[in-house]
Image 1 (tube, helix red, strand yellow):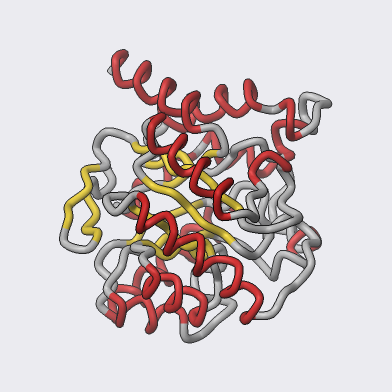
Image 2 (cartoon, helix red, strand yellow; image 1 turned 90 degrees about the vertical axis):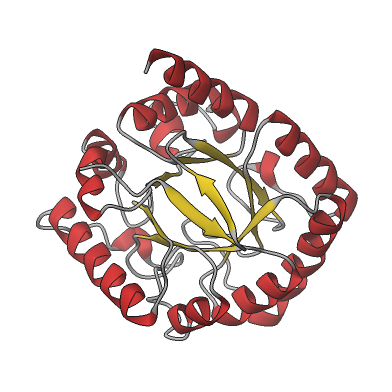
Length: 277
Protein backbone atom coordinates (compact mmCIF):
# COMPACT_ATOMS: atom_id res chain seq x y z
CA UNK A 1 0.00 0.00 0.00
CA UNK A 2 1.38 3.43 -0.94
CA UNK A 3 1.38 6.36 1.43
CA UNK A 4 -0.52 9.60 0.94
CA UNK A 5 1.69 11.79 -1.23
CA UNK A 6 0.63 15.41 -0.61
CA UNK A 7 0.14 17.80 2.28
CA UNK A 8 -1.58 21.19 2.33
CA UNK A 9 0.52 23.95 3.90
CA UNK A 10 -1.37 27.24 4.17
CA UNK A 11 -3.20 26.50 0.91
CA UNK A 12 -0.10 25.34 -0.96
CA UNK A 13 -0.02 21.68 -1.96
CA UNK A 14 3.38 20.09 -1.35
CA UNK A 15 4.02 16.92 -3.33
CA UNK A 16 5.83 14.27 -1.29
CA UNK A 17 5.86 11.61 -4.01
CA UNK A 18 9.41 12.87 -4.53
CA UNK A 19 11.05 12.78 -1.07
CA UNK A 20 11.84 16.07 0.63
CA UNK A 21 14.42 17.16 3.19
CA UNK A 22 13.78 18.91 6.53
CA UNK A 23 16.71 20.80 8.05
CA UNK A 24 17.11 20.83 11.83
CA UNK A 25 17.78 24.15 13.60
CA UNK A 26 17.94 23.74 17.36
CA UNK A 27 17.73 26.97 19.35
CA UNK A 28 18.89 25.17 22.46
CA UNK A 29 22.18 25.12 24.38
CA UNK A 30 22.27 21.36 24.94
CA UNK A 31 21.20 19.42 21.82
CA UNK A 32 23.13 16.16 21.42
CA UNK A 33 24.83 17.31 18.21
CA UNK A 34 26.77 20.50 18.92
CA UNK A 35 26.74 21.54 15.27
CA UNK A 36 22.96 22.03 15.35
CA UNK A 37 22.91 24.43 18.32
CA UNK A 38 22.00 27.94 17.23
CA UNK A 39 21.18 30.66 19.76
CA UNK A 40 22.05 33.93 17.99
CA UNK A 41 19.63 35.28 15.37
CA UNK A 42 22.38 35.99 12.80
CA UNK A 43 23.64 32.40 13.14
CA UNK A 44 20.11 31.07 12.77
CA UNK A 45 19.47 33.11 9.62
CA UNK A 46 22.79 32.05 8.15
CA UNK A 47 21.98 28.40 8.83
CA UNK A 48 18.47 28.78 7.39
CA UNK A 49 19.83 30.41 4.24
CA UNK A 50 22.40 27.65 3.79
CA UNK A 51 19.86 24.86 4.30
CA UNK A 52 17.35 26.42 1.90
CA UNK A 53 20.06 26.99 -0.73
CA UNK A 54 21.13 23.36 -0.38
CA UNK A 55 17.61 22.16 -1.10
CA UNK A 56 15.70 21.89 2.18
CA UNK A 57 11.96 22.09 1.71
CA UNK A 58 11.29 22.48 5.45
CA UNK A 59 13.12 24.01 8.41
CA UNK A 60 12.40 22.45 11.80
CA UNK A 61 12.86 24.84 14.74
CA UNK A 62 13.13 23.37 18.24
CA UNK A 63 13.61 25.10 21.58
CA UNK A 64 13.35 22.07 23.86
CA UNK A 65 16.12 19.50 23.78
CA UNK A 66 14.57 16.04 23.56
CA UNK A 67 17.79 14.08 23.84
CA UNK A 68 17.64 11.35 26.52
CA UNK A 69 17.82 12.87 29.99
CA UNK A 70 17.68 16.46 28.73
CA UNK A 71 16.80 19.19 31.21
CA UNK A 72 13.13 20.15 31.42
CA UNK A 73 12.45 23.84 30.76
CA UNK A 74 9.37 26.01 31.27
CA UNK A 75 6.82 26.76 28.55
CA UNK A 76 7.76 30.43 28.82
CA UNK A 77 11.44 29.67 28.22
CA UNK A 78 10.63 27.48 25.23
CA UNK A 79 8.41 30.18 23.70
CA UNK A 80 11.13 32.77 24.27
CA UNK A 81 13.64 30.57 22.44
CA UNK A 82 11.59 29.89 19.30
CA UNK A 83 9.34 32.86 18.50
CA UNK A 84 11.98 35.42 17.50
CA UNK A 85 13.93 32.99 15.27
CA UNK A 86 10.74 31.91 13.50
CA UNK A 87 9.73 35.52 12.91
CA UNK A 88 13.23 36.36 11.66
CA UNK A 89 13.36 33.39 9.26
CA UNK A 90 9.88 34.09 7.92
CA UNK A 91 10.73 37.76 7.36
CA UNK A 92 14.00 36.94 5.60
CA UNK A 93 12.67 33.90 3.68
CA UNK A 94 8.89 34.42 3.33
CA UNK A 95 8.44 31.40 1.04
CA UNK A 96 10.01 28.97 3.53
CA UNK A 97 8.03 26.27 5.30
CA UNK A 98 8.82 26.28 9.02
CA UNK A 99 8.02 23.41 11.38
CA UNK A 100 7.86 23.91 15.14
CA UNK A 101 9.31 20.99 17.08
CA UNK A 102 7.34 20.95 20.34
CA UNK A 103 5.01 18.76 22.40
CA UNK A 104 3.33 21.76 24.07
CA UNK A 105 0.20 23.29 22.57
CA UNK A 106 0.94 26.78 23.88
CA UNK A 107 4.33 26.76 22.20
CA UNK A 108 2.81 25.41 18.99
CA UNK A 109 0.20 28.17 18.91
CA UNK A 110 2.71 30.96 19.51
CA UNK A 111 5.05 29.48 16.90
CA UNK A 112 2.31 29.22 14.26
CA UNK A 113 1.25 32.78 15.03
CA UNK A 114 4.89 33.77 14.42
CA UNK A 115 5.01 32.04 11.03
CA UNK A 116 5.46 28.29 11.52
CA UNK A 117 3.23 26.18 9.29
CA UNK A 118 3.71 22.63 10.62
CA UNK A 119 3.64 21.17 14.14
CA UNK A 120 6.17 18.40 14.84
CA UNK A 121 5.24 16.65 18.11
CA UNK A 122 7.53 13.99 19.60
CA UNK A 123 4.66 12.75 21.79
CA UNK A 124 1.80 12.59 19.24
CA UNK A 125 -0.37 14.47 21.71
CA UNK A 126 0.32 12.23 24.69
CA UNK A 127 2.19 14.88 26.74
CA UNK A 128 -0.38 17.66 26.24
CA UNK A 129 -4.08 16.84 25.94
CA UNK A 130 -4.68 20.20 24.26
CA UNK A 131 -2.21 19.62 21.44
CA UNK A 132 -4.47 17.82 18.95
CA UNK A 133 -7.44 20.21 19.44
CA UNK A 134 -5.00 23.11 19.06
CA UNK A 135 -3.60 21.71 15.80
CA UNK A 136 -7.12 21.12 14.51
CA UNK A 137 -8.07 24.72 15.30
CA UNK A 138 -4.97 26.10 13.57
CA UNK A 139 -5.48 23.91 10.49
CA UNK A 140 -1.81 23.04 9.99
CA UNK A 141 -0.15 19.71 9.10
CA UNK A 142 0.89 17.58 12.06
CA UNK A 143 3.84 15.23 12.49
CA UNK A 144 3.03 12.53 15.06
CA UNK A 145 6.03 10.70 16.47
CA UNK A 146 6.11 7.52 18.53
CA UNK A 147 7.58 7.78 22.00
CA UNK A 148 6.97 6.39 25.46
CA UNK A 149 7.31 8.48 28.60
CA UNK A 150 9.15 11.79 28.41
CA UNK A 151 12.65 12.77 27.23
CA UNK A 152 13.69 12.40 30.86
CA UNK A 153 12.27 8.86 31.29
CA UNK A 154 12.15 7.28 27.82
CA UNK A 155 15.44 5.37 28.13
CA UNK A 156 13.79 3.12 30.74
CA UNK A 157 10.72 2.37 28.60
CA UNK A 158 12.11 0.03 25.95
CA UNK A 159 10.33 -3.20 26.97
CA UNK A 160 7.94 -4.27 24.18
CA UNK A 161 6.22 -7.58 23.51
CA UNK A 162 5.90 -6.75 19.79
CA UNK A 163 7.28 -3.30 19.01
CA UNK A 164 5.91 -3.03 15.48
CA UNK A 165 2.42 -4.17 16.48
CA UNK A 166 2.35 -1.80 19.46
CA UNK A 167 3.48 1.10 17.29
CA UNK A 168 0.88 0.38 14.62
CA UNK A 169 -1.83 0.43 17.31
CA UNK A 170 -0.38 3.67 18.71
CA UNK A 171 -0.46 5.38 15.34
CA UNK A 172 -3.88 3.98 14.39
CA UNK A 173 -5.35 5.41 17.60
CA UNK A 174 -3.63 8.75 16.99
CA UNK A 175 -4.87 8.90 13.40
CA UNK A 176 -8.43 8.10 14.52
CA UNK A 177 -8.26 10.95 17.03
CA UNK A 178 -6.86 13.32 14.41
CA UNK A 179 -9.55 12.31 11.93
CA UNK A 180 -12.27 12.87 14.55
CA UNK A 181 -10.95 16.38 15.18
CA UNK A 182 -10.62 17.17 11.48
CA UNK A 183 -6.82 17.19 11.20
CA UNK A 184 -6.39 16.26 7.55
CA UNK A 185 -2.63 16.22 7.01
CA UNK A 186 -0.85 13.90 9.44
CA UNK A 187 2.65 12.52 8.94
CA UNK A 188 4.12 9.55 10.81
CA UNK A 189 7.55 9.51 12.49
CA UNK A 190 8.63 6.16 14.02
CA UNK A 191 10.79 8.01 16.53
CA UNK A 192 14.14 6.32 16.11
CA UNK A 193 15.98 6.30 19.44
CA UNK A 194 12.97 7.49 21.42
CA UNK A 195 12.12 4.78 23.97
CA UNK A 196 13.95 2.34 21.69
CA UNK A 197 17.30 0.61 21.88
CA UNK A 198 19.67 0.76 18.92
CA UNK A 199 18.70 -2.82 18.05
CA UNK A 200 15.00 -1.92 18.10
CA UNK A 201 15.65 1.14 15.94
CA UNK A 202 17.52 -0.91 13.34
CA UNK A 203 14.71 -3.47 13.37
CA UNK A 204 12.15 -0.72 12.73
CA UNK A 205 14.20 0.78 9.93
CA UNK A 206 14.44 -2.65 8.33
CA UNK A 207 10.65 -2.94 8.53
CA UNK A 208 9.85 0.68 7.72
CA UNK A 209 7.70 -0.28 4.74
CA UNK A 210 5.13 -1.80 7.13
CA UNK A 211 4.13 1.72 8.16
CA UNK A 212 2.80 2.38 4.66
CA UNK A 213 -0.33 0.50 5.74
CA UNK A 214 -1.23 3.64 7.71
CA UNK A 215 -1.40 5.49 4.36
CA UNK A 216 0.41 8.55 5.66
CA UNK A 217 3.71 10.13 4.62
CA UNK A 218 6.67 8.85 6.61
CA UNK A 219 9.21 11.16 8.19
CA UNK A 220 12.50 9.54 9.14
CA UNK A 221 14.92 11.15 11.57
CA UNK A 222 18.10 9.16 12.17
CA UNK A 223 20.53 12.02 11.63
CA UNK A 224 23.73 11.60 13.70
CA UNK A 225 21.84 9.59 16.35
CA UNK A 226 23.40 7.18 18.81
CA UNK A 227 22.14 4.16 16.84
CA UNK A 228 24.74 5.25 14.28
CA UNK A 229 27.67 6.58 16.25
CA UNK A 230 27.62 4.01 19.05
CA UNK A 231 27.35 1.17 16.54
CA UNK A 232 30.40 2.58 14.73
CA UNK A 233 32.21 3.58 17.94
CA UNK A 234 32.24 7.23 16.89
CA UNK A 235 30.86 10.55 18.11
CA UNK A 236 27.83 12.44 16.80
CA UNK A 237 30.24 14.82 15.07
CA UNK A 238 31.69 11.87 13.11
CA UNK A 239 28.37 10.29 12.14
CA UNK A 240 27.60 12.02 8.83
CA UNK A 241 28.61 9.09 6.62
CA UNK A 242 26.58 6.66 8.73
CA UNK A 243 23.63 9.05 8.54
CA UNK A 244 23.80 9.08 4.74
CA UNK A 245 23.85 5.28 4.66
CA UNK A 246 20.74 4.92 6.81
CA UNK A 247 18.96 7.78 5.01
CA UNK A 248 19.54 5.85 1.79
CA UNK A 249 17.96 2.75 3.35
CA UNK A 250 15.00 4.87 4.49
CA UNK A 251 14.52 6.25 0.99
CA UNK A 252 14.51 2.74 -0.50
CA UNK A 253 11.82 1.84 2.02
CA UNK A 254 9.59 4.78 1.16
CA UNK A 255 10.48 7.69 3.44
CA UNK A 256 8.77 10.88 2.28
CA UNK A 257 10.81 13.31 4.40
CA UNK A 258 14.33 13.04 5.78
CA UNK A 259 14.84 15.16 8.92
CA UNK A 260 18.55 15.96 9.03
CA UNK A 261 21.32 18.16 10.37
CA UNK A 262 23.16 18.01 7.02
CA UNK A 263 20.90 19.07 4.17
CA UNK A 264 23.32 18.91 1.23
CA UNK A 265 24.17 15.24 1.76
CA UNK A 266 20.51 14.27 2.27
CA UNK A 267 19.43 16.08 -0.89
CA UNK A 268 22.16 14.27 -2.81
CA UNK A 269 20.85 10.94 -1.50
CA UNK A 270 17.33 11.84 -2.61
CA UNK A 271 18.54 12.80 -6.09
CA UNK A 272 20.56 9.63 -6.56
CA UNK A 273 17.82 7.31 -5.36
CA UNK A 274 15.29 9.16 -7.52
CA UNK A 275 17.56 8.60 -10.51
CA UNK A 276 17.64 4.88 -9.76
CA UNK A 277 13.87 4.77 -9.52
